[in-house]
Image (cartoon, rainbow, N blue to C red; front, top):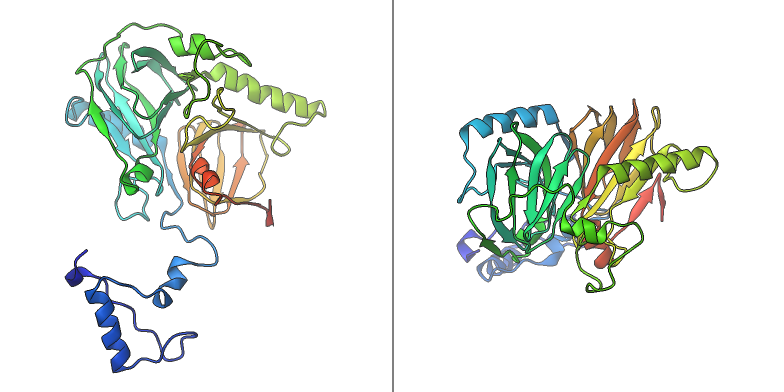
Length: 372
């Protein structure tokens, strides 16, 4: 920013507490600050250090049916190839000035691939995942390892991994992409590199090599390196997630602990080499609510995106409440109060930027007004 485009220093009112008395000398001092690109803290402290978070992002809901229809139309008009790279349509939070960001740290998009179509290979420093609400027939190939994508699967593309997609089916497929693009963008740490024009392994195995090595409960290969920043598991399959949620709720009925709250089961996808989150900047979970359950209201530092996997219910964020059904997406800004209500059995996928704030020791959670 040059001196000519610097924002003017705000002159404070005569009766503003802790502020100097306006005068020609004070105004001249402030003009000097502007020329030297300086801003005095005493004029900005209320915005920079509020009593609680005031995120620019706002709560918002996107209907899956509308997203899929626009993606389908894009599939007929927009090619996939070098230059555009992906037919991905990002959620643009209304509070972020038109930026293609769901929150200041998280990117969410619907990606659409036509029958027999390829998305070319590339890699980037941003961490990415795919979550499949419906459909199958696409394989994502991560560092040369083909990974099948099916309904309910959560699939990882760790940062700086070469990856492309190919659709072997006779029907199109759409899925949710999640990345930490805004965080990497704002921190100026992006690197990007093209790979081959076409996916190098077009085989269609039921299980990837990474799954065959790492997806055995409680077991890990001794011969491979130790802790990794991102999980080596290529795909967390729905049948395992579904069974874990069902078992939690069944054990609750039998009187054993394990659920988040009555009628509310949840699991977190984890890195088997550390026990922590699947990626350094992203936390991912799946939640299941029994019909009629209403969760406690929860606030959390950091933002999240929720997607309905199955069922119907309502999501309340602050003063706004929406009816939601399969595929619908809701953004929850930092420190916004969230309450979920299940009309039917309700399964929801959630991803959040929590690991960033935990590493900065800035995380905070409040449940029904009681900090913990």
